[in-house]
Image 1: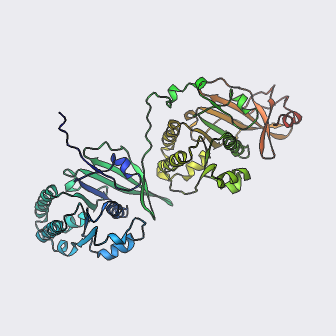
Image 2: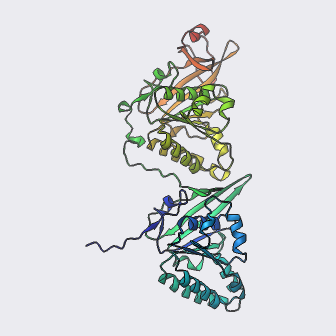
Image 3: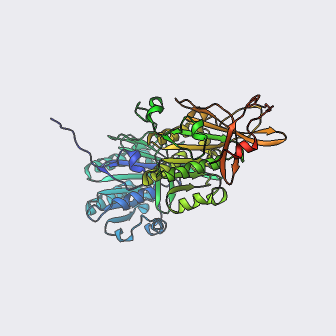
Length: 497
């Protein structure tokens, strides 16, 4: 016989929050929302309250901040979640600041109990609980009174049929809140400022009875309120999306849209793979990426481009502009300096699912790293690994470009040492032939699949890549000079579509 008690979860309505809470806030639970000033604690509390409160399940909001509710609501009504029609019907405000300032907790407790019994709320909020504690510490024997107050308040919490939220400012270097041990859930909010960027982060420190999502999650405050971006979780279950379990012969091959390149890759790029196109400025990385996306559209496969360096009108072809306008290709275009990997992954996954996209281009990793907030750059490789793993888990083919400095004396494929994360690599280089710079490319690897190892000269003609025949008698890619090349200009021009 199953005697387990079923705990109902309340959907907060805050995008991304329920995912990290394990499905929502447990009903009738006592929760703390704590953090440093300015992290968005009150905004989060109001957003949850306006989403959950109804006339049948009202909310009671106690303010101990010393400012009138009208002043607080003046700023909160700027958010789209604010609903003025709920004030006085589904949501009720009560100011405790006068009682708290006296240091006598008897009237504070009495007023809280009186209002709760009068309204019978389903939701109770107290903001800021830190103010009550500070008031106690200023009074003689305040610590003893505070413990008694907390004890009596805790007994009332247990008897109320309400889900309770206590909001308080607690710096990261301060002692834990006294109610931390008895609270059912604890949300910690913080913000990190580095140079001209600011990133807000959230952690579920505790949530009884819930399988919460571990880790630190970023969030952003916009006109719509708070949006949480759950940290990408890498799951390697040995299934079909596990890199160790990839079997290229059984996967369909995707054409790249560049004549001759599929042959170099051993028949095209296996679907679901990630490929890195690395090369110096002007070598045609973006042109190759454009061809990859256009080829997908021609074959009925929607695509998405994530641009970090230039807008499409600056560097992409008119064809891409038209496909974006027609909704055949999705565009995520940002030059923000306070991005997190998780935010980009969330936006990308949402667009992939909406468009049912099969091809994704990230242009470029160099711009991506600059766009990511400084606090994330130290673990950029780890974050990039999580992003690629998530994308491979939803069976999309990813093409990433990487800007390299062509030194002629070394061979690198990624400035971030992240080439090992990808399934395939194409490298583009410049060589000197008879006092002229020529472009050459080679396929460095295709995981688990045979591929050409030939070095081929190519040209960019009318915005398209035209691959020539293999080079011969070449002394090496690292600083060598070609003594003779069979890839003449006539050969190259004659190998187009």
